[in-house]
Length: 195
Picture 1 (cartoon, rainbow, N blue to C red):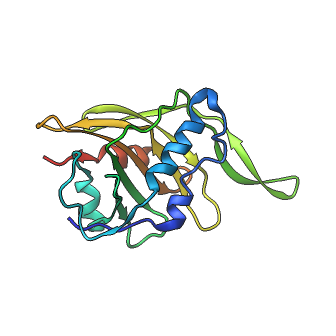
Picture 2: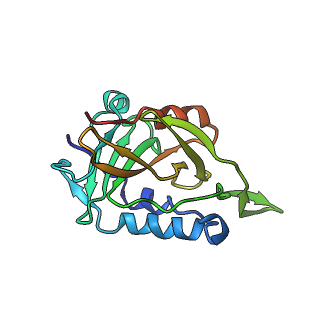
């Protein structure tokens, strides 16, 4: 399976503007996400994996094969991108190590005009839940759209175990518009374990 990459802009946009709150696990989450990007480089395919592979057959059929990146630590990224619309993507991150836990959905930042000036404003939110590979998974909005990026949405970390007993840890990200919660849930729920 061949796959593309979101690139530096996408990866940089995945960090919260308000993740310094340690009471909800935001700081540990931010550090874990940053660490998962370390060493990711473009690859022609995933090859043999020590962890099960999650894919989105639906978005591969709609948008074509994803870009692939992987790291020496065993992390992989599959990047499905809409060829007709910029800032319209679904990414799957797989890791041999669990992602840190979030006990509360962090606020998301969005640039808004306040007293005539463009200002970053944080918005509180609650987790939403969707079903991914047969299990309920929480997700949240990471940031609103602005400038050269769309809005970002992320699942919390979750695990999947294949028939042979191998377990991997995953996180999904969607880049898109600000008001597309139903579509985000559909994209997340399209992801399946490779049999």
